[in-house]
Length: 253
Image (cartoon, rainbow, N blue to C red; front, side, top):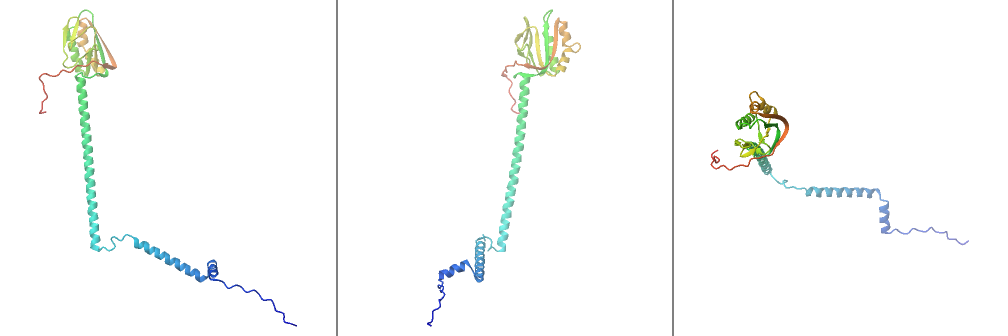
């Protein structure tokens, strides 16, 4: 019988270089893994070395004495800065103290000016006090008796006073007899004479009512006297200041 050829198995094609590279990437061997790890470590070490190399090494090459000199210079600068801070803080405190003293002096001067303005009758005022109403009945009252009453009120602490809501009474105010009434500061006022007086009501009232005092003298002259204590009253009249003809401030004071 003739020999029958047996079927032959197909042979696999010879792998190319690309095929071998793909196979190595998809299924790396143990040796390839080791090589990859080593390469990664080498790369990390190289990057770290570059970073350390870029660090500022300004003082790296200095000698010991050079470093000491640098530290001394920094210490001197710090000391000068601290001294300047102390000086500025002292200046600030002095300014605060001077400002406070100046403000206190200005406030005191303003208070004194206000007090003088009230005493001179240059400004309207308000406050507690009394209202004394003197009504002539049997005849005119004596101007001297009225002046005595004003002096008693001042001694009792009267701080401001006006008559009939028209005339402010101050230290320089003159009282004179006049036809039909009394001249107060050159202004004629008539009965009833209404004195508005600011001060402590009890003390002012006592200055009118003490034995043989103003009330008794005025009633002896035929007048009636009424005294009302008030928690608040207004004195609106003011004195027009007059320029002195002869007196001048003392420059040496």
